[in-house]
Amino acid sequence: MLEKAIEIAVEAHRGQIDKAGKIYILHPIRVMLRGRNETEQIVGILHDVVEDTPVTLDMLRKEGFSEEILDALSCVTKNEGEDYGDFINRVITNPLATRIKLYDLEDNMNRDRIPYPTEHDEARFAKYEKYHKVVAAKVKELDKQNL
Image (cartoon, rainbow, N blue to C red):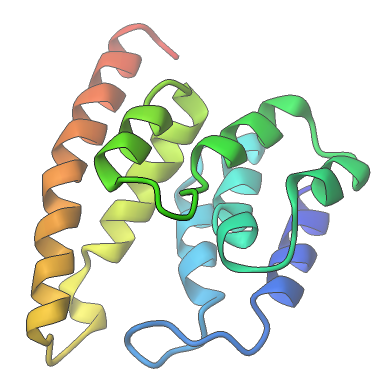
């Protein structure tokens, strides 16, 4: 299923560029590579497809992805108009989504990706740093519970 997930993500993100001007798929690949097992890797590579591309959860369900993966993807998908704090609170209800969001935030917070950050970039970094603390604390709690 990982190979299928990679193929879907590559096709879905084809032509997208990130805030640093690089091809977008590199971000989901970096998130995927942080995964500790195949399930985390699948959610990592697919974590932005539902939010940022025409791919839907139903399409992924028809491709054979498990409900565990689909539930995590639903949690890491920010809904249009959803407050970011409310989104993070929804993410941390799902242990798998929580870990993927941690990997996602840490990649997004990597200042080396944007050599000349704008004021807007700095504001985004500050937002990510604020919510990273919440997500990292939840992951630490999950680690204590061996989840």
